[in-house]
Amino acid sequence: MTTVLTRKDVKPVPASPAAAAYTVASRTGGASALAAGRSQIGSEAELIARIKGGDLETFYDLVRPYERAVYLAAVSLVKNDADAEDVAQEAVLKAFKNLSRFRQEAKFSIF
Image (tube, rainbow, N blue to C red; front, side):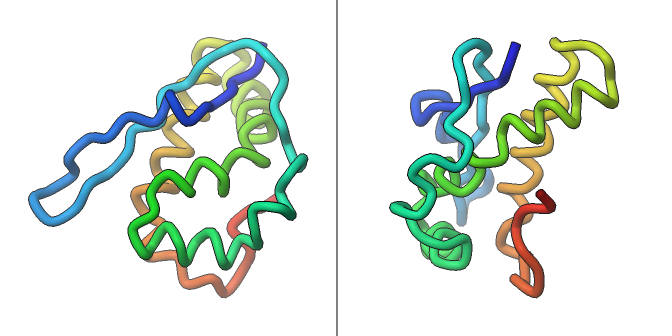
């Protein structure tokens, strides 16, 4: 079982009066499009700049290539599919919430 995030899984949630955040809901089943189409979308730096500029839907394009790897890493840690989905979702949400502090001195991905 894999976690596959789609655009319809991204729900707007007010983060504060000055900003909005998105909660990424997980969905199971299907295969992940890891690196397919990544070059068409743009580099990580371009995607991050667009997200920081307010194009919040672009965050999905940034994390899509890594969602399966994040899920598999979570499974290896928690040894339970349901808990791994929660851990992976929290990791993606935490990355989104802290993206504004990302200084781009390294790659977004650790993979």
